[in-house]
Length: 481
Image 1 (cartoon, rainbow, N blue to C red):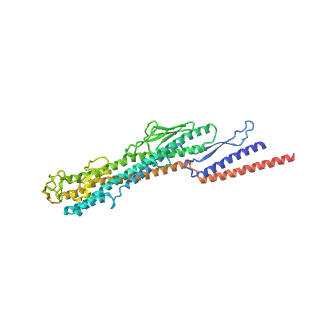
Image 2: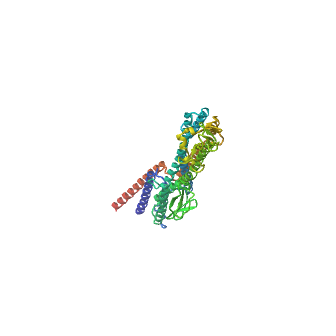
Image 3: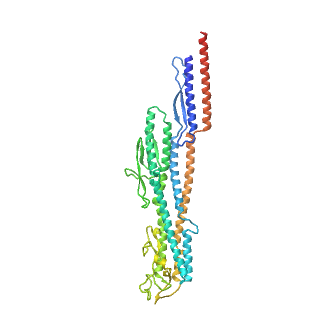
């Protein structure tokens, strides 16, 4: 009986040690991402058939408290949060290109142009008024250029983040490949460990963390196979199966707005997460803003160039479509106000015109060639009236004109930025909710673990007392014989 008592006590010590070790493990990993609370699973040792007396307790396993349902919900929310965070960041960068309202913004500069044109209408022969208008137009063109280029810089920076150019972490695509291969490797280790009877909980924790990171980056869903390995899918494309991993690659470019992520076999991923938001920004959002900005440039250049072509300078030089110049300006015509670039003589709308629109260098060097009058030029003497300058100033109030188009663009950027920020807040709230749900099942309760540790310590001490008492009694019996 004493042997059985010692055997039962020894099994109790083993169980208490396992519970102490597990509680210590849980407490030391309270803040470890991906860690799930571990629990010791005990079972009674089946009593001998002849005696009917229990033979102690055995440690069956150390398992994790986890919920596949909550893990999947959390994975979805991480993908949504990754997308929302990236989209909000992108919109913030894009909005920085439009410092409105401000005294340095394009809206203010256009307003100054129309004001100075109105002044010119009252002083059509004033060289100072002519120079002010030309300088205003030049400032507007340069701001259109810089705004367009700033948006291009945002797209290029996003592309660099995506492909890893100029970074040390391989970019988003490189990070995704590292995580995909890590998950495949962990799959193999977990299956091998389980088959060998090894505790693989720490490997499962590492895989859970890698899956969450990949979900935030790319947007994925997973299934766990019977052997413990995990299959990872993105938009119907299998990225991980058992120990097999698919490598991803970046294709296209920001400049052509066709950036994409593909498998090395050419399958295009309909990516979510951070990568999905980045691709949407580079391929759709930024080009949309640049296109509408070019519409502003086209409206401005088209309106003022047409009036310039129909007008006559204060000195009598006619525009291209006005009456033919008489001496001393025979054969001479007014230059266009805006051209596509500093080496061009005409302006053609479309494409990325906001990137290259410029004031005609000829007009910059001689502002007196600005059309301020209307009518004909007779013997080099213009019929001076404010009609052309007034018509130019009125462009600022025209429905669908450059000001309207620009305000619509600013409103679009503002509304999309606001929507992105709201989506970010909603995604964060959802993530917090699903994280709390996961934590309620998988998280470590420090109070509970502290109590469990104290209970195990007391049980350990009690078993030690039983062993000590049994040993003392046995010794006394031996001495009495």
